[in-house]
Amino acid sequence: MTQLESKGAAAATPRKLSGSLGVTAIIFMVVAAASPLTVVGGAAPLGILIGNGVGYPSLYAVSAVILVLFAVGLAAMTRHVPRPGAFFTYIGYGLGRPSGLAGAWMAMLTYTTVQVAVYGYIGYLLSVTVVSLGGPALPWWLYALATVALVGFLGYRHIDLSSKVLGVLLIAEVAIVLVLVAAVVVNGGPEGLSLAPFEPSNVLSGSPGVGLMFAIAAFIGFEATAIFRDEAREPDRTIPRATYGAVIGIGIFYTLSAWGLVMAWGPGGVLEAAAEDPGTLVLRTVAIYLGTVGEVIVNVLLLTSMFACVLSFHNVITRYQHAMSSAGVLPDRLAGVHARHLSPHASSLVQTATAGLLLATFAVLGLDPLLQVFTWFSGVATVAIAVLMATTSIAVIVYFARTRADRRVWNTIVAPALGFLGLAMSAAVIVAYFPVLVGDVDADGSPVFGALTWSLLALVVVVPAFGYAQATWIRRRRPAAYAKLIDAIAG
Image (cartoon, rainbow, N blue to C red; front, side, top):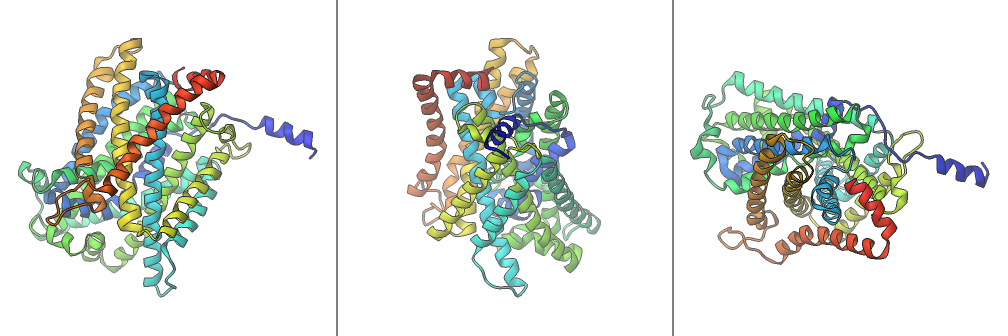
């Protein structure tokens, strides 16, 4: 190929994502990001142990209600904002371009930190599993980097391939958890079946604030349905349905699974069982109710669940970068779309390199993959997503109040306002208990806002502030680029 032909081919490369993803495929993509088996096996035992104990399952239902209210406004915006930027376009339409750009960077912070956190977890699980099978004791970060490479390969190709991989893994992990719950129901548990987890005295016991933190974190990813707009079939119908389907499905599944976990040990015994070792609570439960074979299956599916999670977040981040590049706030090359795979391949490569660089940095610093990488950065992601969704709720109300584009009061005012109140209170609770996540506590275990806590929470302030500063700089120094930003973020 001559140099001229090469330039022509590059110029012909499409810059708009396309596809025919249906409701089910998009739900698979975003629910996989929530990593159901990882939540049931990791977050639920911790929520029971250091949260509100027997009443923890109820907090999944509470979180689902808050997020369904949020989703009402999100779905209304989807019908009037024909762009795939999700949070940052919606905030931009409602609160202006600088706020929209700040929201874009906040979203990038959320998904980048949660993805890196999960990479740390999966690296740890793989290293432990290999050693338990008689293999060599290799450092966790080698396994994490290998996972980054595999995720990068799938993310580079067409999203249909990723959705199929995610679909198979998601069905398998959901199925084994439902089988476990069914076995508990048939057996009846040591104390019989009951609705004890939903009794007010149990819901408000212990530290419900810590429990709510784990519960809200379990839903991260569902709201990303709108980022797949350009690749969806009939997006005005597909995206709202996928959003509702994702949050309602996640809420029901987590509530049922956590209830089954409590019933498996009994309301009087589950705290003691979790205290013994929260990390193995689900495996011990499976061993009792499904036998050794079931335990092995769950151990394998826990690993694939983590993989599905990072693959889904990879797809979300690459599409955010693609949308931001189209808006003129990231290098133009990231807006490129692969001629054959129709994927944001350049963005995928950059995201793969970014994840690899962060993990290499953590390895050099000698951070623990669970107690530091996973815990710290999943905490940052949880605070960021709560603030981001609360801001989006305000943007929805302002947008429809200004434009009168949709006169449905419930969809454009009442539900978003209730969602905002729920998310704002959740964010306040999460921040109050954030020191517990990072180990900033005093002698009696009470939260203390030390240097580490403030440093991590500062990311939630500094990153969106950079977005505001970038918008101001572009408006003053690059007026033509600001016009492009206006078109991309606020029509």
